[in-house]
Image (cartoon, rainbow, N blue to C red; front, side, top):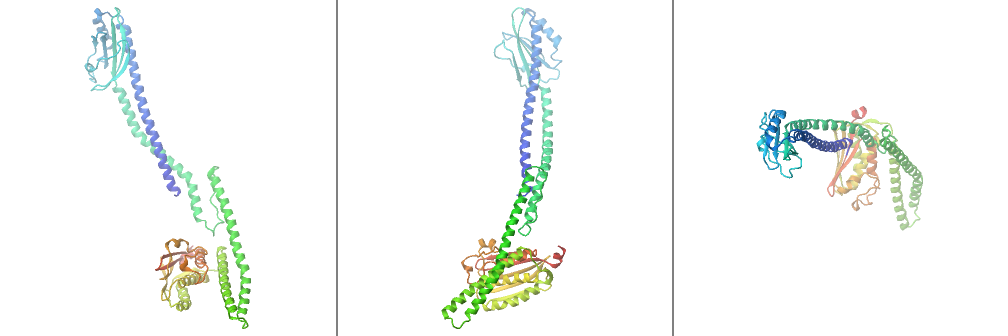
Length: 471
């Protein structure tokens, strides 16, 4: 996962959480506002009901209810003010009931009676076809002791209108707020992860040949800066360890060359002594073969250490096709000894720049590897061609092939596939490692495709001379 995909994941998570929080906040705000508006309207109706009960009803008598009705009409005019007023006695008789309001928003005759204790006040919301009514009821006692109930109500339409406007505002404002917050979050996350992306890109570029390079240090004063500094310290320790390992291999290989040369000379001299018995001569010959094989391993390790150290001769421009044809002709003797047909198909003019001797070693190692693991009567094809800005060299054989699980490891040092590639053919598993190191030093790529029992194809892609010069 790169920094860009991580930023998208973080922004998506942030947007989801933020949207959930905003939606919950909007829902809570809506219900709180509705409760507040309705409670406020009910409180106003309750105060008005208590006012009627305390001024008009408290002074009324049963035989003077007509005067009370007139006073209610005169002072409160419920129809004109779109209010609902109803005064009823404890026996259920309705003393006064307001008529239809001017805006016809509700029908007073459809408002149900209140049940329960007559002496208790109440506040309720009554749904009606034209719209809900918010009604407050209070008990009252007339001057003659008659019990009354005063109900005062008003339409909930104003509150519903305000709530509708709030819903519209939330429906429009919520996506805008989420969009702005997500955009800001994306910018912040991108800015926060941009140093991580630079560190990741640089880390991908660092190899064992460029351990002297370091990751960019994020001067943020936080854990990210500490991480970049710690990683650079780790790379420095790796550089010291690998440099020491390479130096050890180079020194050991160099020191072993002289005693091995002396041993080989002494053994060759002893093997030529006519006084030795036949069995002793055979033993010396076997030891001499092992010494020679050990000398080849030491030479290969010495070559790898030089390649790892970056030692190189002057590059020159030459024709890879011509080099391949010449090398194939020289290697044809080994192929002929095993009755293997070696065919070279190279179009001239495939010019590259590099160390001619090193790249010849690549061809030699690939052909030698193909000859070793191709049975008698087999076929090996060497092909050089141009592909865009690349020179492509292919070595194809119909030998024993390589199992699929071994393909990722064939270029590792001292790696050998299995018993089908036993030590009888010779070698120590360093030839392909040398090929890869030479290719890496030249900016080339090497890859292999193979099918067990059907053969293998090694492909080297080297930049053409014009592209190499441009680089």
